[in-house]
Length: 157
Image (tube, rainbow, N blue to C red):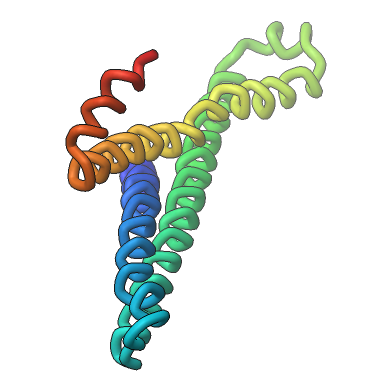
């Protein structure tokens, strides 16, 4: 469950990052440009202000969700693996324990588990990065299909 929620947070961040540029562009067209000419109504100003704050809050919240649940996933995996390592130590014969120092066994129960689970935490971030590329490309297609085609051809190079 934490992995799914963390990935969902990463994808939400990618969507919010691309969405923020669209909202900022529209807000510029609807508020900043007309402000120099005919003026802008208070309702329009409030609407776009709320939209910008909402997108920013969504980005911030999605980062917190991704990081919190990725850390939860890592901590749960570490707890489970530590329990398995310690259970294995408990079933080992006494001759095994007599040939090793207690500190060595504790170090393996901690450092090996941390080394094993370190790779899981960046996984939602990496999935979010792929989602960011997809969302950005879709946005580019919606804005200018010809430029998107040129970008798609040049991107691999």
